[in-house]
Length: 212
Ligand code: SF4
Image 1 (spheres, rainbow, N blue to C red):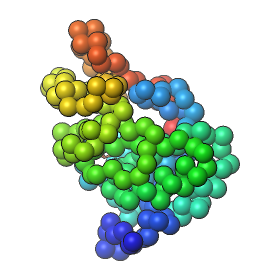
Image 2 (image 1 turned 120 degrees about the horizontal axis):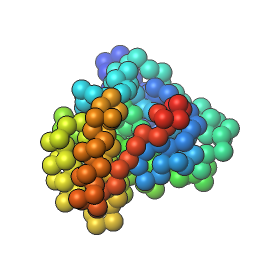
Image 3 (image 1 turned 180 degrees about the horizontal axis):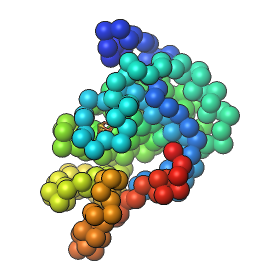
Image 4 (image 1 turned 30 degrees about the vertical axis):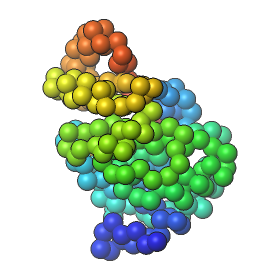
């Protein structure tokens, strides 16, 4: 199947995907925080969160189309047991071939998505981080093992609570301060979680560790 995400950019998603960057690091956020993981950041996103910290990922045309075989080689060179596919918005692409390739290596597949597109692929862990700027689909919310809501404004607590009622009962619930305002937001988030202990706080600890 030929996937087209721009007039001038065509690729066969069975063989290659647009990748902004890939690297072996420590997962800094959410339920698996502190765990070594190989990150594949796919390029392309149309959700347009104003506070996005990876705006350079938005335009897939600015990034290389990387063969899955190259990703396989890179994964093979690391000691990663978990592969986190993030973006951008990774669910814009057919991810069946990528997850098959990762599973064929005996590795776990994790995805981080806004939920704005149907999720393809076979995932061991689904983190849905819904955004106000493009609605998360019910079929994605149903799949979530982890709900991670970014708190950039006090209204976001209500937004988080709304999604907390929609996810399945086993789903882990996280509130994460928007990085550029995290110092100002933390006191309110701490109070909120003390009042609403079904939520936990997620911090972007990789940023404190100065790692990608
Ligand atoms: S969904 Fe993620 S990558 Fe896309 S604009 Fe929002 S924060 Fe940035």
